[in-house]
Amino acid sequence: MQEKQLPRYQQLKELIIDKISSGALKPLERVPSENQLVKMTGVSRMTANRALRELNNEGYLDRKAGIGSFVSDFKVNSHLFEIKSIADEVTSRGSTYSSVILEQSLILPTNDLSRIMQINGTSQIFHIKMVHFEDSIPIQLEDRYVKRGFAPDFIKQDFSEITPSAYLSSISPLNEAEQVVSAITPSLSISELLQMKKDKPCLLITRKTWVRKVLVTYGKFYHPGDRYELLGNYGPIMRKKLSNKKHD
Amino acid sequence: MQEKQLPRYQQLKELIIDKISSGALKPLERVPSENQLVKMTGVSRMTANRALRELNNEGYLDRKAGIGSFVSDFKVNSHLFEIKSIADEVTSRGSTYSSVILEQSLILPTNDLSRIMQINGTSQIFHIKMVHFEDSIPIQLEDRYVKRGFAPDFIKQDFSEITPSAYLSSISPLNEAEQVVSAITPSLSISELLQMKKDKPCLLITRKTWVRKVLVTYGKFYHPGDRYELLGNYGPIMRKKLSNKKHD
DNA sequence: TGTATTAGCCTGTATATACAACTAATGTAA
DNA sequence: TTACATTAGTTGTATATACAGGCTAATACA
Image 1 (tube, rainbow over the protein chains, first blue to last red):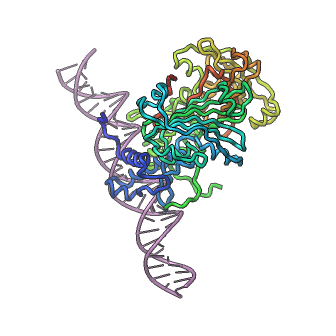
Image 2: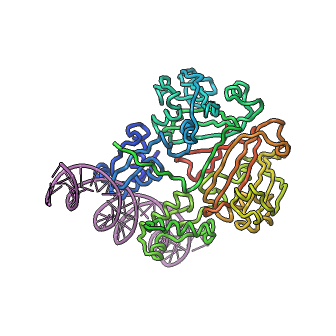
Image 3: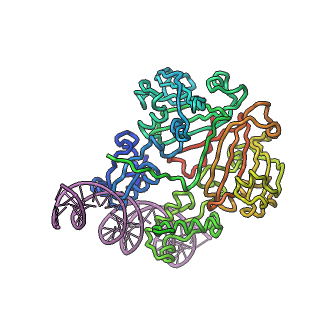
């Protein structure tokens, strides 16, 4: 494969993305400057500039003239998509967030699950089931499976302190996601957990996320139809600037 | 205002975007080559290259080595977001598309509507209401308002031939969109139009789109919950690729 | 000691130049 | 006519160079 070698600026980009994905470079950490890349790899400054500039445009890095280039803080803003932590979403609306954990365990996947998550049926995976509240009103039932190898300490986390979404993002930025949104009539148990009236509809989001082309988590997120909306903005204007933060 | 003048590559980009937005440059039309831009504007080839390259990355242009640079065909793939024409979506699944038009008129907006669309209450706007079918099964009820100035010939179109979405995209690329997804219990009339069983949920998409910072259309799109899913892909890989995805 | 300057990083932009790869059209020889 | 070579125009990449402007820390100086 790989008959033609990639252009050098692209090689540089992938080298840096790999270091971020593998955790060798963590959020807010400093990334080599253009001149350092020149010395390290022998490219000219302009191609180092192109690599870093494009990584900046794609949201992997934050750059500041006079300061340097730093890995984006994926905890705050999972770069490619606007899947914010539900806790942040709630608090940013000025409401108070709380949660109840229903299950947090290591299980053997069912056949369907091992197929979806592309794993051997004998490998255990993590399962978390919890309800998220806004001002004591349930707004999301999270039912998520996480590949064991990606987050070995998943079972030890206190997810009343940090949401699973935020925790997973803190381990490594999620490069890719697929999300299917549908409207369903919830089962009785779901309806009760979300304190919904009978026959009220439910917004169901089924989401898979990948890191370095490997699927790491699969989850279903149920929202009461009358208490939750999914907002999407599309356009050139929404690139956000980070506030002044201290870098090490 | 405008204390600091923008960099030259950025000026070039905006110049070209303006020509596209205003219709001076239409989809598939040729855009000046790098060397032509050099002669026209006096910049160096590298900055002309940067302008065109970034416009390419952002989806405004299609470039081919040896051929040239061309305005993207927004009819097929509305660049910034994956809001495809529902007709294309259906046919790309191998099904047959059809539609029924319920209303196509020029009306005076209600108070709410004139506020949402940011227009004077005395300016008339277009209203289209139609049902879209996949293999003779209704999958979407479209209820859309269009600003008169943006599409003066809207009322004359035969929307059984071209969907409103495709028609509007053909006039000018839509730069920006906002979309709210929710799950609702449909009203009786909507339920009947979509041939849904009683108390079945409905996926409602409320969408606004802007051209050159001006809101041009506002619409509600109702989908039977059990016959429609909204798929979203987020990641670096899917540039240019139409998501002919199979749901399993 | 306190302040101002300077030196040295960093990114951001702009230019000039060069070569490669691709494509279409043209010219040329069999 | 056909097949092949040439040529000109296009994008894509890479380098070397230059200057501007932001920021920090060391230095010089009063």
